[in-house]
Length: 405
Image (cartoon, rainbow, N blue to C red; front, top):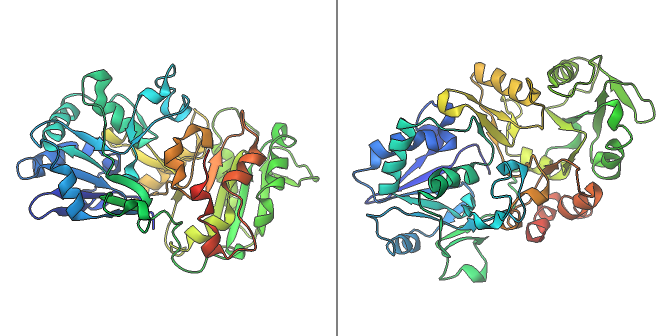
């Protein structure tokens, strides 16, 4: 299953495997850069490489050691399977807008590696210079930018043996040092519809534009769903929760939804799903993923972003909030104050399919996308998120992993 951590594999003799979340109590460890001084100090003298893995990554250790032996361990190397943007994208702050494909960044699922000389230099840089960006949004791209350092550092070197093909694929035999478990995580029977309550945040100006898309696509998969707005419209219907719509910051609406969920006004369920009115989501796939989590425990699941992680900041589940006290960030601050973690899954997407590298999406079974602008949202849902309802949930969820953009 996909959990909020990476697995670190540090090459010594024998190799030492560490779980990222267990290295310290620092909330920012998952963003890698703040942890580089620790890695340099702890392993700089006895290791040759640090290899970063995802939990769904399978490793053929003998092959991986052979691959790394091709590179001079005394030089700076940044190795991985390269991804690139087809068009400039908001999640990368429109970097390299004139030619987005020129910049390569690693697919974390294939594993990626840094030689110790590069780790040592980067660790010194992290200690001497504060990280420039307050936000951690797409970690793989941001790490690559930091290493590249405006052309002063190494580019990503493509390693064909770092693969994202399925482990049982004939193409991987004898070639790949890493493979991928690309199936949607399923840890038991999918969560039942009656255990999920869906809250849709909307407002009057989007009732005629966005709500019809939800009704044409995924609304039918929800047993319990309510639309929350600044205006009661019985034709939808929407519920006016008494919070005026704002252009920036939707904390009042979100906390009103949380209060209503805890009241006797809605069915009592094990899970609350909060979505914007321009979110496309596969609820059957979400039901399967939720089978991996215990609803009796405090779980906040989605796409994890970070704010000020190198300065003692916090993580939050992104929900497309505004800029002034956005609700997703405020919830992140609350969870941080309570000492509760947020759980990351790469299957949730804050942007559109067009905003992600094609090869990155090719080995995923996505659960959600966000934003309708410059796309046909119904067509996007049908291509990326719609499953054959006649197919059992445990089998139907992997077909779109082979879908091409």
